[in-house]
Image (cartoon, rainbow, N blue to C red; front, side, top):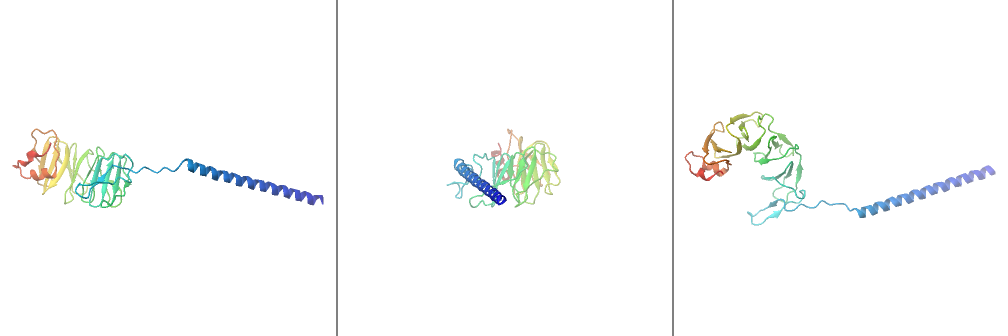
Length: 259
């Protein structure tokens, strides 16, 4: 009988201890939930502010403008804007933003880059070329967001100007002169070495190059270059209008361009 009573008491003690442990666990869980609830009210989730007044779009020739900055980081400092047939690119220091829906409200995507500062963008047949002065230049594999270097075989990486002609020939202007490639950058030939190049354009089969000493012209696919404007100029930048104006060596219209 004493043994049975002892067993019952031990069971009761075990039951009471178990009940106390359960009560303590429930109380602790309630406290955790309450603290979590209080914390969530005290520290609300932060929503990134919507960017404003960074980039605007006009669909009526500039009469009205629409702010299309939403989705970009606030206070983003844009260096360059490139607009293609259906896409928009923005560069900001070492970051490239891209939207593939230029016709509607853009949805901005942060493109991966190679941790080098972006200095300029130039139009190509299948999308833009992106230059980084002293680091060469890059091109996106269409539709992938992957940027590949185009300068591996290029002797001078100080790229200031890029031109892709309708037949796919690439010209790159650098501080050491002008380089030409007919195989998408696999091999390069230096076609001018007298002075650094800062701009390149093509119009009606004529190539015009702007330099810090004036304008040059080529009518044989960039193999040979002739000076066409050098008087009183310390820096000259080529444009489509310039190219058409200096199509003929005797044209005086070229005197109105450059600067």
